Image (cartoon, rainbow, N blue to C red):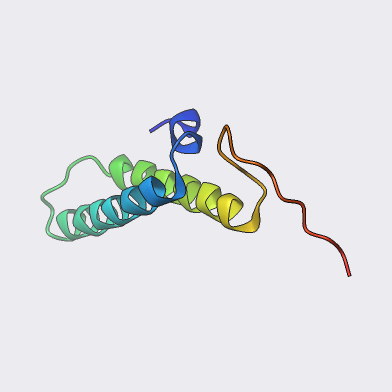
Length: 78
């Protein structure tokens, strides 16, 4: 997935994709350990996509990123 596609996902959709991607990373690790996977770069790509998804999810949770149409609520400093 491209970064723009990830950013367009809602937090609930992103959570589902995070689970799927983490399963994919685990499966690729097993395949590499059993020498069933010849493409060793596949694990690198999957881990980077997982990291991108986690970054965008963290942005949603901290309020840095909001979806289009949502109001951005600024936190007051005490």
